[in-house]
Length: 315
Length: 135
Image 1: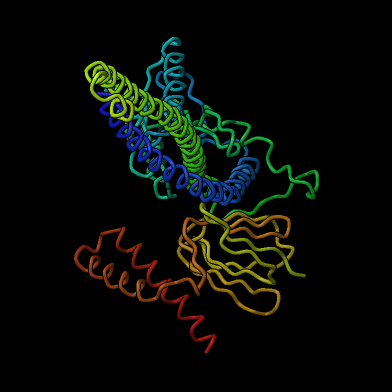
Image 2: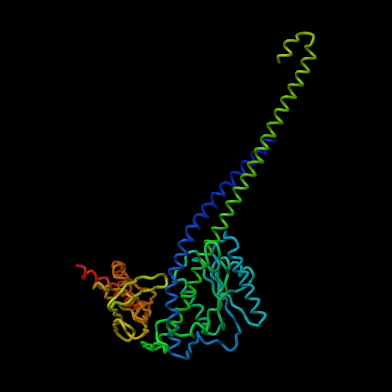
């Protein structure tokens, strides 16, 4: 009976141990990916800074810009939200906090009487919204842990097309910003129409005269802006994707670390219980033997007391 | 007096150097930048960009569209795809060229194929330029 319990505990410990091995491996993988993802985030900064600068210069030079991507619509009837989650789970509250922020934003727009559209990045959000009967505008999956610029362009094209076609009048991004390996925060940023402050303030770089340099354009400022703005949007989306990927790995690393720690604790506790059970069974066995021997001896001594007193004492 | 040149793709900074002159082709035609050029923004075609590096070396890159910005004695080439001549896989470019040419022969209106052909040809041209220069 007691030995059976011990065997069950042993089996549980073995299973926790193999789970621990898996979580430990995932932790290490995630940790090594964080570094790479973080480097990708940093490597993408110069491009987005440069492109922002060019957009500013163009805006300052060409004055009133009338690209549809820049002009805020008079009436915002429908807002599209692009949310960035992971393809896989096992990363703590990473996915659910992005989804929660999205639900909040959707509720806000609904309260203002606007329609809503959702553009999904990541399998987890897709599952969530489809399960709730929400039909996403578009959904992109399969690359969240290692996004490329091509992926960003795909999303950018879809969003720009939908916006220009008038399917929605504004687009917002909701993603997890990677602050450091220890801190990530869910942020909500407007994407299109592009904010005026991006365009305004023109060329305010130090070292130029107060008048500002007069730019030459080839072919024309408008033509350049028209092909530049979609790229600017792509770059913004790409930055969001990279931040989300780095945050995903960081969250997964943290989640897997605590899973490994929990497994350790569980193993310690189970081992303790198992040892106690074994000790208990040994104690019981000894008790049984002792009491059995005691009983035998008392039987024997009663029977043999008159026959042979030395034999009874030695057995 | 050299000035700074930077090739930037969305994924990373590809190339950075001090240069004497930068020659590239915008959608309107070839243009060269020397130090002290007026601020300039141009849309680039699918063409090669030549950079005369300060120590009299020439660096050639294949740039597939994008923008060039000149301001404050600084040239920045923003491009989705830009490859330095020594990074180009000529075999792959050769295969891509054949595939694109075939596609174009089947359907002369295929814009993707003609773009692909232009890119492959540019790659070969740029890679060939340095191969002969080093010889």
